[in-house]
Length: 166
Ligand SMILES: [Zn+2]
Ligand SMILES: [Zn+2]
View: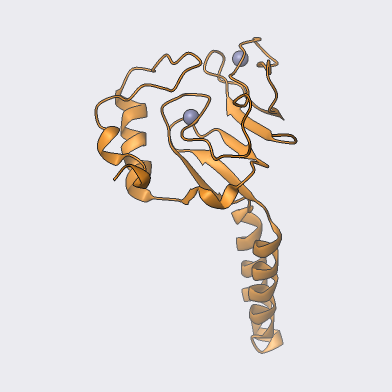
C-alpha cells in the first residue's frame, strides 16, 4: 500500500488537504489524525471508507471536467472557421486525456479521495442512488463517531449494502 495519496476534509476544522496516506497522518492545521491504511493489507479493496467508516467507495476518472469542457467550448467557437474539424479534434483530445488519467476512489459519505489504491478496478463506478442516500445521511444524521474499527451500520445503510452481500 505504498504511494497512496489521500484528500480529505478535516472533521474538526473543515480544512481540505492532500497528503500521502501513511499511518499517523494528521491534519496540518489542527493536528487531528486520520486512520491510516489497513495493516497487513495485500492489495484487497477497502470495504468501506477508512476515514468516516460509514461511506462506501466508488471510482471515477481523476479528470478535470472543467478543462474538458473548456476544450470543447473553444472547439465550438473555432468550428465555423475549421468546418467543424476543431470539434472532431476536441473530441479526440478529450478521449485521449480521459484514457490517460488514473482512477480516483471516492467515499460517498465524506468525499475522501484515495489516489493510487491497488486493485482499483474492483471498486464499483458511481451510483446516483447511493450518492443521494449518503447525501441525505450526511445532511440529516448526526456525524457518526467511528473509531478505528469495521464501521457502524446505521439505519438506511444496510439495504444498500455491497452487491457481494446478496
Ligand atoms: Zn483539522
Ligand atoms: Zn468516508
